[in-house]
Image 1 (cartoon, rainbow, N blue to C red):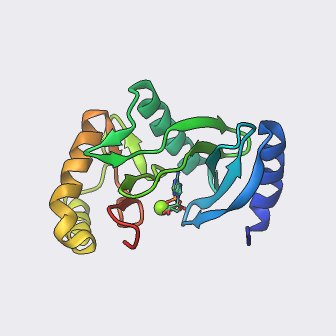
Image 2: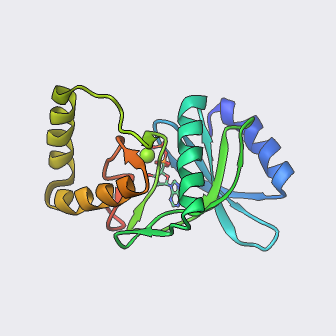
Length: 167
Ligand SMILES: Nc1ncnc2c1ncn2[C@@H]1O[C@H](COP(=O)(O)OP(=O)(O)O)[C@@H](O)[C@H]1O
Ligand SMILES: [Mg+2]
């Protein structure tokens, strides 16, 4: 598994603290690296190590909200369940989900949408409509349900809201 140097030492500390065994890499995105680990009960979990603290705290707070509200699905899509987090290591441990899923809340805002100008919102909508093609109406319903929980997801893309294994 090829991990950035900035993550290696945090991964080591985190797995020691949590008594986890590293199994494999799961994904690498713009905000962090996600690793599959096995816990003492031999269940697999995903641990996401963020590069930057602001995205980490945004994502952590969204998972805490979802956890408070006991949300496991949104419009039938699976949402990972928060297992543990570490503010010093910028690590979020969660269950592993398979598509259809919705995850990655580093670009999500609590209780109010980001203050984009109307022009930025217009371009945002046009871009998302293009990215999701025929799924865009369904994605809008998903976003509306998240908003009913006070969660405003700005960073929506087909990698984060995935309907099938290959999309
Ligand atoms: N809990 C999870 N269950 C299943 N796959 C996951 C999980 N967390 C991350 N992934 C996979 O790893 C990829 C990168 O994770 P993500 O949270 O989107 O990182 P980034 O914020 O860097 O985009 C995701 O697109 C997804 O394929
Ligand atoms: Mg992502």
